[in-house]
Image (cartoon, rainbow, N blue to C red; front, side, top):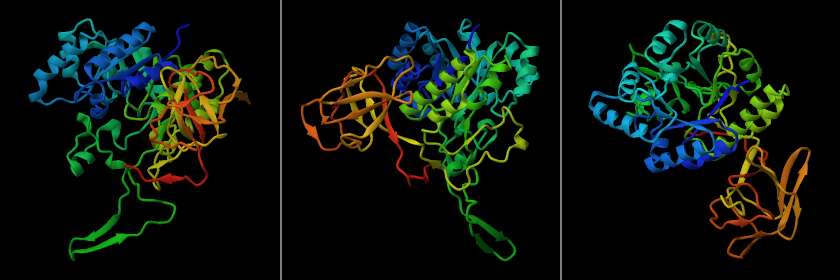
Amino acid sequence: MQKVELLSPAGTLEKLKIAFDFGADAVYGGVSHFSLRIRSGKEFSMEEFAEGIEYAHERGKKVYVTINGFPFNSQLNLLKKHILAMAELNPDAFIVATPGVLKLCHDLVPNMPLHLSTQANVMNVLDAKIFYDMGAVRIITAREISLKDLVAIKTELPELELEVFVHGSMCFAYSGRCLISTLQSGRVPNRGSCANDCRFDYELYAANPETGTLFRLDEEEGVGTYIMNAKDLNLASHMKEILDSGVVDSVKIEGRTKTAYYAATTAKAYRMAIDDYYDEEFNAEKYQYELQSLQNRGYTDAYLVSRPFEKHDTQSLDFTMQFGTHQVSGVVNEEGTHFLCKYKTLPNDELEVVAPIGSEIAMVDNEIGSIYERDGRIYLKLKQLLAQNGKLWEEVHSGNVNPMTLPASLPAYTFLRTSAHLGMGTYSKR
C-alpha cells in the first residue's frame, strides 16, 4: 500500500533539511518574486535551492517549486527565463496558480509535472476537470473544500492527484484572495508580499455622515477586536478520517516563513500520524502534544470535515498569537557535538530532546551531563555549561554564540526544549 505523501514547507536550505530529517516525503519552496512568499524566496539562492534538490534526491525525496504568483505583463519575459532556469535544477514539479502560467510552463518544459496552487480555488469537479485537461497532474484544493467534495472530484477524475492543507496559518479572505494589505500598505498578497494586516488589533468607530459625529466603540471584555484574525489550521486529530476517504494523495503543511522548530515539529507530528494510521495505532493525543508546543493563534479544524457555515470557532478575536506549551532552549549543530542556546539555560535544567524521526540516542551520565529516558521521552541535564572554547558559564541566554558541549553526540538539528513558564500567556504580534 502506498502511503499518502507528507509535504512540508522549505523556506531555507536548513529548513529543507530539517523537514526531511523529521519525516517529510517532499517539500515546496521558491527563490523569486514569482513565489507567493517573497521573503522565504529571497532566503533561497539558486545555488542553495539546487543543493536542496540534490539533498532531497539523494534521500529519495522530492522538491516542488513554487511559481504561484500572479505576474504583470511587464514580468512575462522574466517569468519565462525563471521557468527555464528552475527546470534546469531538475525539481519534481512546478506549483502554479493561473491558467496562463500553467500553459506557459507546459509549453516551455512539457515534461515537467504541474501542480495547481490552492490560489486557483478549485472546489468542484468542473474546475478540476478544466485544469486536469490543461495538463495539471495534481490540484492543491481550496482550503474551504469539504472531504465530501474531494471524494466527488476523485470519483470523476481518478488519475488526478489531490493535495490538501492540514496544518498552518489560515487566511481571513477566501483562499487568500485578499486586498487588505494592498489597501493599507501597498503590499500585494497575491504577488507574495502580504503584510498580515488581518492580524492587527483594530479600533472600531461609528460615524454619522449627516452630523460629522464620530464615536469610538468600546471593546467588550472577552470579545476582542482582532476582528479578522483567523485561527491556525490543525487537522492532526482528523488524519484518520482524511486517510480513510482514500482520495487524498498528499497532505500539506503551511509555513515557509516560520521557524526551523516549526518545520521540525509539524513534520514529526504528521509523520507519526500517517505512520500510526497505516499501522492501525492512531493516537491523536500524541500528535497534539507536539503541535501544542508551537506558538499559534489558537487551533481550528476549519472546513475539511465541517461546512464553513457550521463553524463558529475559526477566529481569535482577543489575541493574535499565543505561546505554546514549550520553549526551544537549544539547537544541536550539524556535527552533533554542541548546541546553540535559544533560551535562558542553567545547569541542571531538564531539557526534552526532540530528535529527527528514527534517531538512536545513547543514554549517558558523565561530568558534562546526562541523557536519560522517562515515560517514553528523552531528556538531557547539563551538570556544567562548558563552551566549545573551554569557558565555563553559570548560565547561557539566547544570542550567546558560543556552542555548548553536549554529554554525548546527538543527531544534527536535534532541538532541546523546556516547558513554557506559567504566565507567558498570549501576546500581540504582527
